[in-house]
Image 1: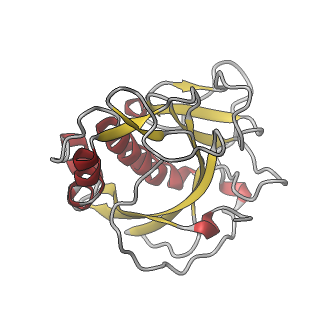
Image 2: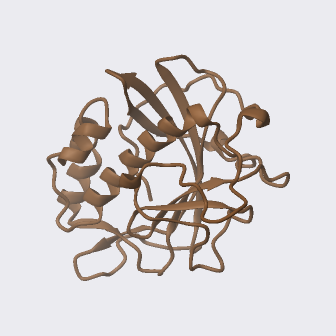
Image 3: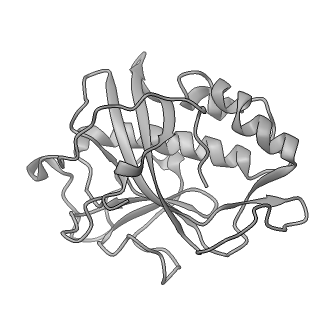
Length: 231
């Protein structure tokens, strides 16, 4: 479960055209795979220990950006899944910025009680320093005395890709058709929502990213059904 950065947000006119395959980062075929994202985003593997993990049939790299949370970068496109797209080299810093934002967000949401004040990592990863989360999700979770956990024993899987439009030297948009297994829980570990119908919940997010003083940062995260091809 990934809360939005705010309760409001304007839709961004977007295209679903994939990046030019000729500029995608080529997979490494010999020896150890070349790591595509920086070390601070967590350990990288070529597989995850969950046989039922959905949406990751194409070989690629998995980064454990927070405990039980993986960011997936496929080596190639999947003809059966529009939302599986390998990044181009110039898109990697943008995806890394989103990974840092997710890492900061979930590292704060998975500790009870949830702190209202944004952590230093939140302040660094978000354009507003995490203020929107402080006034919305962090405040709500603290008042409700809940936090994010993984009582079903399955991870979150994030599958971000950068849209070709809208795109400029200073702004970019990411779509993430993700599979969530995280759930709000109480301090005693009991589930804090009325019903869990499936282990993984498929959902789409739209993420606005801006380049500020040479560093990409997330400016907003909103729900976007179109981010998943058939939702």
